[in-house]
Amino acid sequence: MLWHGAKISKTNSIIRLAKNKNNKLTHKRCWDPSRPVQMNKQTFYFYKPSGWDATVVRHKKLTSRVLFFYSNTYYFKVSLPRTPYSLTFNSNTNLFVLHALYVNNNYRLFLSYFNLVFTAFYKPFFRKVKFKGKGYYIYKNKRNTITPQFGYSHRLYLYSYFTSVKFLSKTSVFIFGLLKSDVIITSIGVKNMRPINIFTGRGVRFSREVIYKKVGKVSSYR
Image (cartoon, rainbow, N blue to C red; front, top):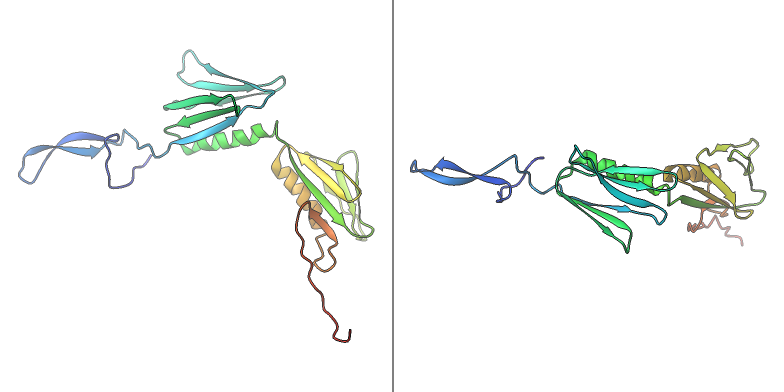
């Protein structure tokens, strides 16, 4: 951890003997690299769903602690840092608040990926796609292979392995899954098969997406 700035505080400094201009020993405060500045502190939040339980386990030999999230089928463990920290739980919001004083970038990256994976088990992502036009149809087989018919002479296939597709009506498709990236890739793939025509308004669009039509050429002999 690097220190920057001209001000030397008492928390990250030590007192050493130094000579002044008159060659007399005086006490001088110097920066101590063994005492890092609290510039890397951060607060992390872990949400505990209603169907999950959580416990904090401490190893006998090691000084580190582990936070366990477990349900009837799955379990996750989060290794807590060995640096000074405070862990509290709010029963009203079901949130674990981890306030660490010194956290490196690797641990911060680990917690961000953990929250991304853990939220996939209790918070699915979804996208709603609508299409408009005459003769436009979308078919789906048992393997979630989407085959739209948007007026092309050849068939278009879109394979969605990790997402589920459900038809809400003849013109709207509901795409949902556990990973946000898979849902976005599948929904954008359907939209790119037939983009919106800005003159007629036909094509595929997302739900609640605002489309402005463009006025075409108007004849002067009207």
